Amino acid sequence: MSEELNNENVENAAVESAPVQESAPAEQAAPVEEAVAPADASADSATEAPSVTQPQVIVQRERGFAHYVGFALLCVLSICFFFMPGIALTFGVSRLVSLNGAAAWIFSAILSFVIWLIFKLKIKGFKKSFYFYIGLCVVVLAALIAIEVLTENLNVFSSISALLTGAVG
Image (cartoon, rainbow, N blue to C red):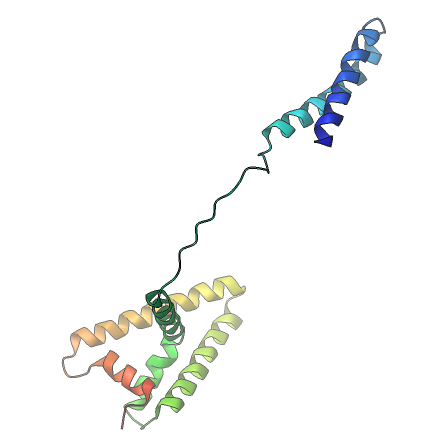
């Protein structure tokens, strides 16, 4: 509110002093016009600013059990997707050597981190290396889907889930 009063006072002072300046030479009239222009601009910006006193209504829905289950599922799938290259290599190694669930997760995490670190060292920039790593994850997922579809006796995703949960014996 005080800004509006100050703006009105500046405008009134400029208007009152303008007639006096008209009788002066043109050199003195130019600074008056420059002084008036910022006052007009601030008055326009003051009228364009949204009113802060308007009441706002915030509607918040209560989240049910399904929301939290879905969020947990998305978190697990995101972690599995990030570890996809390591999981694929661990699945290949598990065909040669027997691994339990904890060893499979640790081995997958270490392999995925090493693969990402190689991308980070070879490709300059964190964002660019992250995009390339996500691209690698998509390619590995596509390869696993292709193996699943093309082979009838090798159930890739059920074998991987059994390996990671420790159900492989």
